[in-house]
Each structure stands twice: as C-alpha cells, then as structure tokens.
Image (cartoon, rainbow, N blue to C red; front, side, top):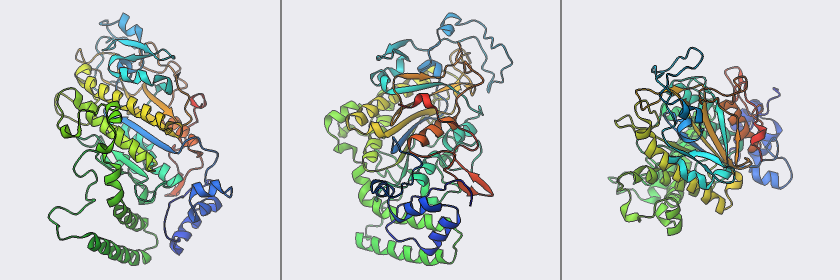
Length: 497
C-alpha cells in the first residue's frame, strides 16, 4: 500500500455498501479513513479514539475571495513611493519583458493616495479604506507569482493548483479531506459574481477525478431562485410536498439499482447524493439565505440598511457594495450552518465600461467601484465573524489570478503582471497585522526573486491550519498520487499565529 494517507470523511446516514467499502479500502484509505467512514470526524476526535486529521487543527472552515480579472496590487495594497517619484518617465525594467498587450508605457504612479491604518501602520489605497478597520487582523503576502499571464490558466492555477483543466478545486479537496459539518447544506458553496462566471466557469470548482459529491454548489444570494432548480417550476402547481418526496424516493431506488451493476462509476453515487441533498436543501436553503431576517444593525454593518423594500433595485456607486455585501452576509449565514468551504467571486463583465478587474484601459474607472464594494463587504464580514467568535476558526483568503504592471497602458490602464501580485489572509491560525514577502521597488517582481511565494504555498498553509498535511492528502488517479499542491508547496510558518 502506498505510504500516502488517503482521507475520505464523507458524511452519510446509511451504512456503507460493500462497493463503498471496497472502493475506499482498495484505494489505499487505511485505518484512519475507515474510522472516519464509520463515524463523524468530530465525534471520533472528541471521543479520543482515532482522528482523521494529520495534526491538531486551528481552523474548520475556509472562505476564498477571488477577484476575477487580476486586481492591481500596486494601486490597492502594495505601496510603491518609487513609482510616484518616477511617474511619467520611460519604464526601464532592466530586462526584456514579455507583456500580454505590450503595456510597457511610462511608469504609472498609484492611481489613489495611500494612508497608514491600524496599529501595524499598513499602507492602503484609498478605495480599500474600509479594510483599515480590520487591517490588524490581516496578513499580506506581496511576493506572489503566477506561472501564466493568461486569465484562464492563471485562474485555474489559483483555484485548483494546476494550469490545465481536469483537476479538483481547492474547496473540493477540503470537502474530500474533512467531510461535511452539516446534514442539509452542501459542504462546498460557490457564490459567483451576479453578472456571470469568471474564466473557466465551473471548472474552477468541479470535483474532476474526486468523488462527484465534492463539487461546489452554485448559489446566487438575493435572487428569486438562489439555487437553480431547487424547487418545481411555477407551472408545476400540481406538485405537492408529498408527491415530490415520493418521486425522489423512487428516483433514488432506481439509481441505486442502476449503480449496483456499475461498481466502478463513482459519478452515480455523486448523482444520488446530490438528489438527496437537494431534497434536504428545500427546507434548509431558504432559511439560510433569508438575508432580510438579519437585524438592522447587521444590515447597516454590511451597507445593506436601505431596507428590504429597495432590494434589488440599486443605483449609482452603491451597486457594487450592495451585491458584494449580499454575498458576504450570505456566506456568514452559511458558515454558521456548517458549510465548510465558501468561494466568493467578484468581477465578470466584458461590457464597456468594464466591471471586472481586468483594467487595461482605465484603472480608476474599473477598479474604483469594485474595490470599494469589495473592501466594505470584506471588512464587514471580518468584523461580523469576529464578534460571533467565528473568525478564530475560519480562514479567509483573498486572491486574484495575477497582478498588474507598474508601467502604463494607454495612459490610464495597466497590463497583466504574472511576475508579482498580492494575496492576503486572516482568521483561523493566521497572524494578523503583518506583511510577509516584499516586491521590488516598482512592484514588478518579488524583492527576493529566488524565493517567491506561489499558490502551492498558500494551499499548503491553509491545509496545515485545517489539520491536513498537503503531501499526504492525496488521491490515486491515472497511475499518479494526485494532490492539491502537485509536487510543490511549503507551509508559510511566519504567517502562523
């Protein structure tokens, strides 16, 4: 048996079938996974028997904020006085630069003024001022690099750990490794931008070769039907709760009979479980997503205090705050109800003027509203989790696929910069009020080019805080022991509290 430890802690109300037992045991799952299969992971750990974790965990949940299109680190988080000094001068990188759209115009100073915030004195750009209220809870990583300057592949790298499609999203790995903390809601939830999906769409959160039930479930908070096809269409007025339950039971029986003759097809189990979960969600999801049930002071914290009668009619610059804050508040309610991993997306609109982070033409016009809305929502979310005692065991990761160049494109925009960008983290086991890794004087590349931070290191650190060793959380697929971090990754110990 391979030395890698396979984790499989899927929660179920039924005893494992012979096929399930053989699949798990034959797949190299071993004693720990067998124990996890026969009982809930938390109960096993509390009873002092066997824990499915590799080491004690500091966190139970993860929330990933993803800025689709590539947010500019040097205009929001990574203050570069040298760009102010050299503004308008011809850019000279000291080496040949392969730019995505040849955006190598003169040096362009930060679009907005920066000011220090918090006891840490962290410099933040004007649009993200709201994060100043929580900046001492945040750890910034300014020396991130990507392996690609193309949106689709770079987005996959940040969401799945691989440049090519066909690999599970990070949330799928967490679901697979730790299992569910609730009976009636998905383990992994995705809250897309209300305008549509980012590059790659569902490939960013698909389970790929992992069991299908670990895929992300897409939810749109605030919409009339936040979960697609959860309830019968309005034309089906003849459908009753009893007939719906009977139909689902019949479908489950037929599917299980079908699956029994196809022992190697894991998709069938995933489909059956998705039907069963959908039935439970019909009761749980509407209550979990009822944002209007929140008290007035909470709605005010998130900037949603204009009254439910105005939803979703929003105008002017408050629109981005409104839509992003809705997702943040919905995320908090889902976390409270046991959702393990939540992915929140910002920016997906190819109309003009843009409403995504891919600001080739005009940083101020594109980034401004998005950054303000993001910062208000994130700050409120962190404050809300903190006052409820949830921040201490919830990891928050803010990311984007790459950064933007310190040179100008067309005078007011910036080109892609895969050579350097910023992530930030806070919550469950993260040391707040610090900066790890520096970029050079222009924000073009890491200051220490031999030791950049990559997504593998971020993923390894998150799994570590969840009690999982990123080198041991693996799945045998096509003759290879696959893992989220591929063959890379190290835990970033200076980030740990």
